Length: 124
Image 1: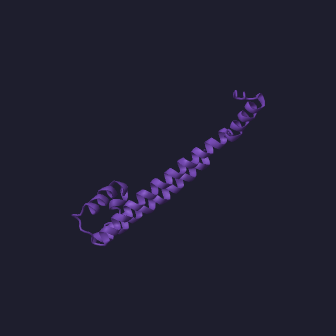
Image 2: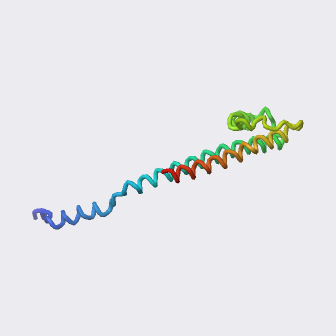
Image 3: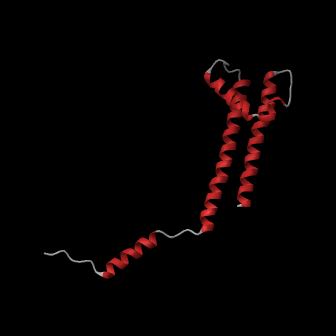
């Protein structure tokens, strides 16, 4: 038997189903999605910076082996992230100095990233 040819109604219905499955997003929806992703990325970066700083504080205050590669990694990564907070306070106790200065830097990154993310959402 010969194969039955497709009817025009079947072709039209199939094309309607394809277009119904892919609703087009408006420009405002796309922009809102991009802005949301960008703001979320800023928040995550601030959180990662704060985690690195807090890990350095915990390793220092907990007397971790300074020759260990993990301790060196967090110390090396935390130094540039501390910005001007690195030597803001200069108590005689080295552990207290790290706790206060790097702890303030961690708070700074959390607050700054939250503010920037909020500004991104408002301005966009």
